[in-house]
Image (cartoon, rainbow, N blue to C red; front, top):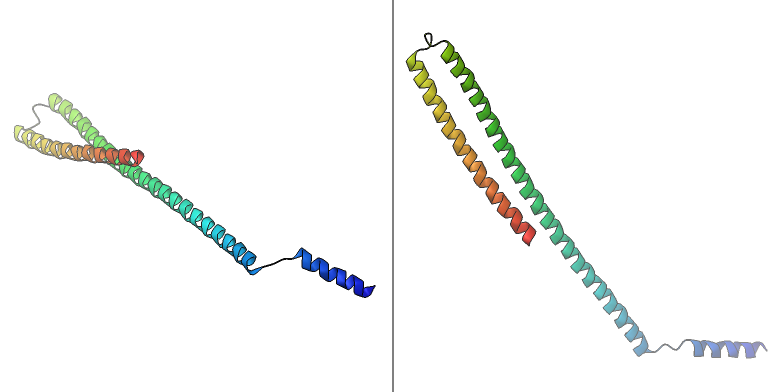
Amino acid sequence: MDADNRLAAIEAARNAVKYTWTGIMDFLQEQYQSSVQRDTEWILEKQELQSKVASFEGQIRAQSNINRDLLKRIQVLEHSLKRERSRGSAFVTFEENKEKVEDDKTKDDNEEISKELKTEEEIAEIAKKQAEKHREMIKKYYSS
């Protein structure tokens, strides 16, 4: 009986597992192709995400440049506002104290103020040009 059981077990094992070299090679090729496909998909997904990150970084740089330019423009406007206010108060004191103010000193002050205003106007013009460039950059980033 022991011999019959052994023979039955050996016969069952032979029938259950039928490995052939071609079957093994086919299985290995399928596994290799699926791993290559997974790697390719992973690489494509990685590239897509890297391009999105680069796009977002470009948008952040453009926004920070615009913010910096706007801050400069605000500073220029605040400075010119302070200067205009001081000119207004100087004008009032000049009107009140006409006899005390010399004509030469007033001419020099007016020339100095006009020179400063020209430079502030140039600065404001430069800031406007830079802001326009940054707007164009943002349009390019959003369109692509």
